Amino acid sequence: MNETIDQIISQNEGKTLEFKENTSPTRNILKTAVAFANTAGGKIVFGITSSSHDIVGINNVESEEERIANILSDSISPQLIPDIQVISWRNTDLIILEIHHDPKPYYINSEGPENGVYIRHGSTNRQALPEIIKEIQLLAHNTSFDEQPCLAANSEDIDFRVASELFKKAKKTLNEHKLRSLSLQTSYQGTERPSNGYVLLFGKNRTDFFPDAIVRCARFKGKTRTTILDQTEVDTNLPNAIDLVIAFIERNTKERMEIGRTTHEKIPEYPPEVIREAVINAIVHADYAIQSSTIQIAIYDDRIEINNPGELPFGLTLEDAIAGISRLRNRVIGRVFRSKGFLLKKLTKM
Image (cartoon, rainbow, N blue to C red; front, side):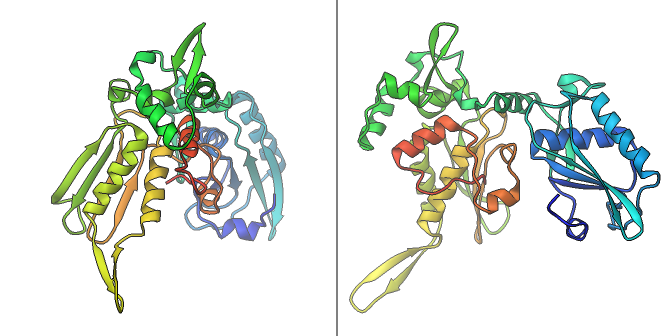
């Protein structure tokens, strides 16, 4: 443990930290341990109140340490082996349970693999929906949703002409080898299938397979969502969607004129490179496995909000993202965008 007790106590509970006054109730401990293991790891500190961070300590600390270890071993599958430490601090004893992220997924035995999987959302534990469980399973096999075959689609559902032209503009050739190396095409039970990423990127009727893979754009009057001044839905292939979304933003934001001695220059309200990177990030990192949720662009008088479906990729914390650590949720889409030259900077989850 690299942090001192003083450093831990100074933090608020969140995605990777939880305080517990004592070692009861057992189910809450199990939920937090499972959620930490499935999401990004974390620490449970026993002997500190969650509301005021008062140090109350743990009585019979050795027996409680053993009890916690046994509960975790007997009640969670696959077997979870955390680091458990007893820390003496200012005449009290604390137990620190450190759990590392390791996608399996983990679940509480009594609730089963369908209902007993939990993930961490902020400072709360949430039961994982089926699509989240699937994402964790894919991560455990070192693959992503967009690398999986789209079983409902075939080669006729792909607009190969649009895909070829896009690569041609980047001075690259899209052939069978390239399709496989980018995981645009994959094998399934002896047949060739387009991957989910291929359909998302270049499907002729993408929304037949992924009805929520669209970008909803709206310009609101003032600083609230009371009145809509302009709106559109972008449901074209993902590379072209970037330009359409940016065009909508440019149409609905201001410019100022900077006049020099002999020339004048139009200065956009928002830096174009920042907007472009934010839009690309939203598209590349959206969780397209989530149903009934879309990428949303909301423009107000004083700000732009860009939201996409999905939490931070598993194993990544907000602190990691702010520090510049990136992890692609959609590897196929990311590879194609990089081949096209879109990804000039490290991507971070929005």
